[in-house]
Amino acid sequence: MYVSAFLLGLLAFIVYKVFFRAFYTVKPDERAVLTSFGRAQRLGRLMVEDDSLNDEEKERYRVPRLVTVGPGGPYFKWPWQEAHKVRVVTQAIDLTWDPTKTQHTIEAVTKDNLTTGVGGQIRFRASENNLYAYCFGVDSPLEHVMGYFISVLRERIANFVDPKGPSLVGETGIAGSGGSPELSEGVSINDLRKNLPLLNDYMEQQCRSTGARYGIELDAALITQIDPPPEVDRALSAINTTRNQVAADISTARADAEQQITMSKRAVDIARNNAQAEVAPLKELADTLVKIKASGGSTALYAYIRNLRVPLLGRATRIIQTTSQSG
Image 1 (cartoon, rainbow, N blue to C red):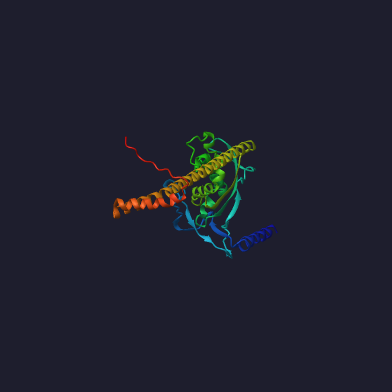
Image 2: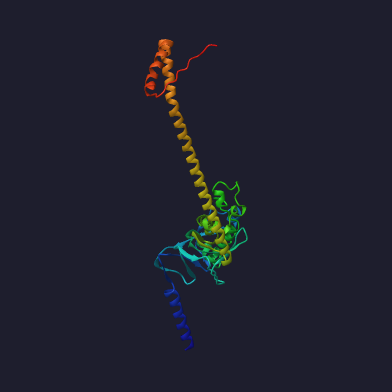
């Protein structure tokens, strides 16, 4: 009786394990890796290679390429085999994700010792070329990648300098001529807010090696907010208002100076033209007298001057004639 029940249960277990659990399917957004007694099927002696790693890291993260099962099914596997399924589509996760604690922002310290909160997302996907690291390298590859990303982000924020220049006053070109040192000094949080695309590009470059390290490829870094504490934010608002006012005053002064310079140049041009207009008839008369004297001599020149005086004498109301007396 007991033997029959045992054999019947063993048969049911074998049927379930061999026939029902022996078949599996792979969704279109998944890839599967088969293991036999815990060992994954490998592509011969091929190893994962990545140029983003240095020589020391290449030796440390030297892992084999695995045989992957594509979408479809049902596929058959033996009872001693296990199918590990991995989603390979691009996914998004918030920067504050941490399986060990709940947090609403990532704290980081800037180069001028201001504590600020960082928020955003990252897009990632499992690397089909390195499923060994993703499935068997670490217990939680996404947690490792997030820790690596946040550590690099904090280091970058702590050393970030605006590549376009430290101040609004310096950009106007007169920082060396009486500009205020306090306004000329850059504020790190403002610099970070103005250069979020540069920060995202830097993070993407620095995290290219995560595919070889943990089997997760970083698709994009989307850091969208830099939020300091309220008291710091109020101080920054006051600084920004002052800087904007200074920039506006400088722009107004520059516009007034340029207008005065333009008006002075035009006044000089007008005076030059008036002087040339007054001198031109005299030069023309002088050239005429020279030509008359050259062609007719002193007699012709005297006759020309006498004829030139006739219209003047007709318009004169009184004529005074002087005579020279010899003593």
